[in-house]
Length: 198
Image 1 (cartoon, helix red, strand yellow):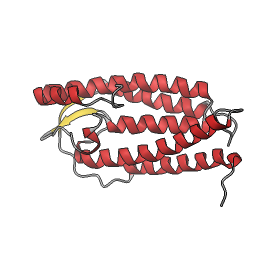
Image 2 (cartoon, helix red, strand yellow; image 1 turned 180 degrees about the vertical axis):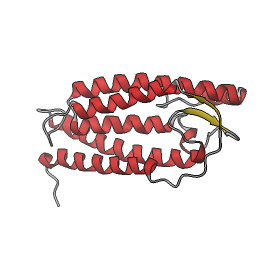
Image 3 (cartoon, one colour; image 1 turned 90 degrees about the vertical axis):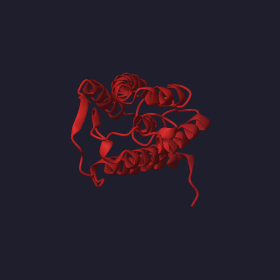
Image 4 (tube, rainbow, N blue to C red; image 1 turned 120 degrees about the vertical axis):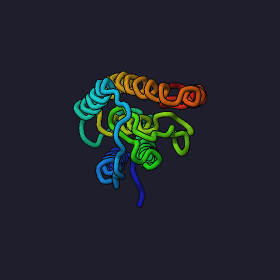
């Protein structure tokens, strides 16, 4: 079957939507192990959660005409954006699945430590300290490239990054208090979200 350029935006949309279902399923349908009691929780990270949620509202709300490329009039750029959306969506689902599996009972929406908490440094945590946020960023970008106007995507990225910085600082503070030098060494050697950038 030959895929024409005109079919590309539809293909991108379908792939991104399938990845969204899988992405949601990772959290909603996972076999949740019994969670030990909290040792410490930072509810301030909820501000970051709220901002990340707002970023998704922006990216979905600022949509362009259905099944059209984000870049019109420039076929190579439109193809590159479509390929990037597909790669980001599939890569994000894989990353988040691996990260949730690595964390197990320690995964939580808000920043917290549980009894017997261990510092995750294996699997995707060997490359970034917060791979779930990396996956969330990838899904935001993929969604924006699939359905949004570029202005909405940029606005969503700014709001998401602000929310993510709040969450990273909150979680890193808890981990630094709990693990001391072990976390300090880890923090210096592994980026928070995007290797080499932040």
